Amino acid sequence: MDPIVDIDFIDNRTPEQAAACDTHITQESNTGKSRKLYIESYGCAMNFSDSEIVSSIMFGQGFDTTSDIAQADLVFLNTCSIREKAEQTVRNRLGQINHFKKKKPGLMVGVLGCMAERLKKSLLEEEKIVDLVVGPDAYRDLPNLISEVDGGQKAVNVLLSREETYADINPIRLNSNGVSAYISIMRGCDNMCSFCVVPFTRGRERSREPYSIVREAQALVDQGYKEVTLLGQNVDSYKWASEDGTETVNFAQLLEKVALPSPALRVRFSTSHPKDITDEVLYTMKKHDNICKYIHLPAQSGNSRVLELMNRTYDREWYINRVDAIRRILGEDCGISSDMIAGFCSETEEEHQDTLSLMDYVQYDYSYMFFYSERPGTLAARKLADDIPLEVKKRRLDEIINKQRETSLARNKRDIGRVHKVLVEGPSKKSDEQLSGRNDQNKVVIFDRKHYQKGDYVNVFVHDCSVGTLFGEAVG
Image (cartoon, rainbow, N blue to C red; front, side, top):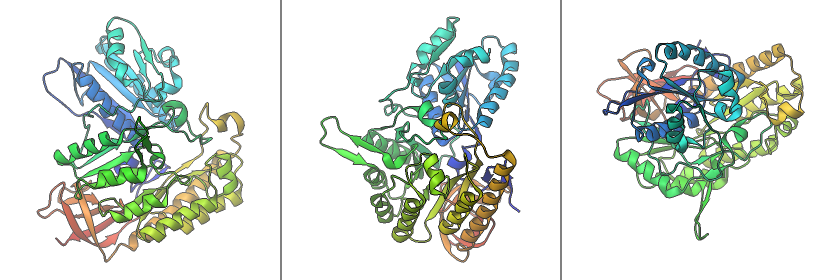
């Protein structure tokens, strides 16, 4: 049986999925700078992308990066607030970092990101070793804040912006495999889902200028990258307009602009919102072979009443309509993944069964799966009772996980006997004699190394599978 990570994930996660629960640490950069920066990034792919922006800003201020916290002059924790567990992980880590600060009193410690935005100045009071607190829209102010700390002061900037996209900052790629990279295309979120803290921690939605996105993609191609993932809280609502109003670009048009210059560059995107994904996007995906046929389309629940309580602004019928459009335009092989929340406020047993039946209908390739955890400040926390007992939440989540295991295995079995184009990302976790990569549908494929290398496109004949992985043999 394949491992389940924690209780929330089937372990067939892509890099952006893994970012939801993994910790990413800066690599070494030894360019002769006088000070060392160490960053730990928690949470979503957007946080990891933000850490690359922060590293670029700090490089300009005389900081190389280090993977050894003991060598650091400045430590940043780039944090997540999506669940209570994520915040507790950061608090525990701050306690551990205190050990290093006792040995090196001049060590600066900063909290960045969503937890910084949510807790603001209270973090300085609650966590005595924290010197600066910086929200997601205030990274340009880091040089000034560092100067304040150098002068013996505590420093805070958690101002949210309606304009900031960091479009002109060239990210320093952290822990990159040299094959795949993230490109942030927008920031913030205007969807007020009742369970979610993101609109409060990342501010209002704004889209990045498209030509800077295309330039960044081309620069990655020039550096040898083979795949980019366009990131946004809701990429389908991307919309940019020129100042004079003569030009507008929506997400489907942006996808094409990124895909056209280099047909060898794979293009992925995350995350789609069911209320916004259009047939135009789907037809654009169909038109270009290098736009991967995979869509992360979070449902959260299969019941219309619960979706209304969640303020998802679509119902079960609308969601099924979008799934039907994906299958009609892109075919049965298009990968679809989801998010599911078990035990949301007042969810009945029958409504839980609606989620399971939706999973049967869609046949997801994989999912993020959680039981509901109330987050302070959200609409649900203010207006809805968290009234489902924990043991019921866990039992319902277990049923969702088991259902997903069945459908993941069934979907993977469909891939047996077929040849898949796989982009090699590196050696497999279990053996250096085997390579690991992903196919068009974002599934992990393992095969014998032979003469192939990281970054190669390889045709692989799949002969076996597990719940989370395809196994095959290179055929050229």
